[in-house]
Length: 426
Image (cartoon, rainbow, N blue to C red; front, side):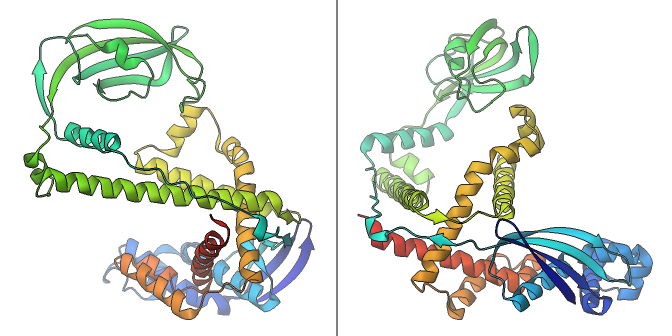
């Protein structure tokens, strides 16, 4: 492996890295195993075909594409170590040349840690505000639990009280159908807030078979950006109404939920709510501390690649959250009428703030000798190995030096935040 370096503006450096076939052969062999696990090769069990057979079956270029990530990660990591570069964030990688039995040549632009001048930490103050859990909140949670265990009985009368309606819904703006504004067999619980403000009040009192047209003004801050602040017309047809019979509050309900009595169930609910309140208070405190530090610290120019890396993280975090809710990123972008590029641009301010928070944490660790020893790092990795023991690919990633460095930085950030809270929190 060989490389050249070139300094760029805004605390960045460019590395032109060349990896020879001899250097990357081991990654080809590893990649061939992964390919053979997915591609059936006659005469061999999955993952057991020799390298030459895999190459003959799928082609060496396919194996190179599979190996490219590991080739780049290892060579980039080694170049940074050799140059003793103090980098931060993920590099921007551009592949300049890649062909079987030839050098792999690529360009990496990476951010160097800019200088950060911390404020006087003795003048930074923050207060932890823990909200008390009262009986009303416990009662509301208990009512929600009762709702999840309600018995639903079809009724002929009008929807009232805590009834549930099954209806078809169509939405229009200026007589034009709203994209994604049609719903069949939509369930509406009168006892719960609807995502469209005022909707429940319009359908309350309707019976099965009835139809109704009405209009609602969406709030300007509504999460569906293409509807926010708009007047929307609705056509609904109720198919069925169900009376929801909630279980009585008592020991029988508690036993169904695995508790010996209602008192024990309430105790459990309160304990969970207290823990949730504690977590929220801690999160709010941490944000307040970091906001104060960022506001009062001074920074050299923040590298654009560092901000872009944070924007990319934010995008994947949003994507993962949406997928957990069963929503694709494509559908979400369509609902807010934005392209992926426009969304990335909208992330810039928050991404810059996150980048500064990372720089502040690192600087505090340096000035106050907050480090992570091998025992701490190995313990964290063992915990992660136990969690992902059935995921061979993830287990393999945990062995890479650059991944160990990332985990070490995460532990260090936690230690820095604990140190800060002990120092500045009232």
